[in-house]
Image (cartoon, rainbow, N blue to C red; front, side, top):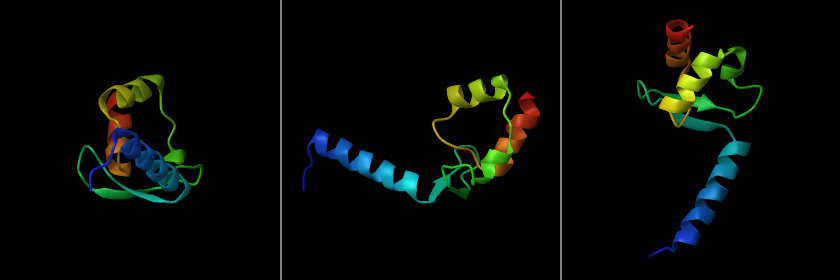
Length: 79
């Protein structure tokens, strides 16, 4: 079946909404390991505080979350 562009975007919005409400399994763009993301204050990543430098670097270089090991390494590497 072929889908129109608007149908694809609508499906993507619904998919993103459901993934936001539920836990999500993501793949780290650095090491390709799969990890759980909860999209809220209970997620493992909320225990890390990012400097402006690290935050800017992550936004400019990655379109999605990093796994905990890679995030911790980037924080240590960039300070």
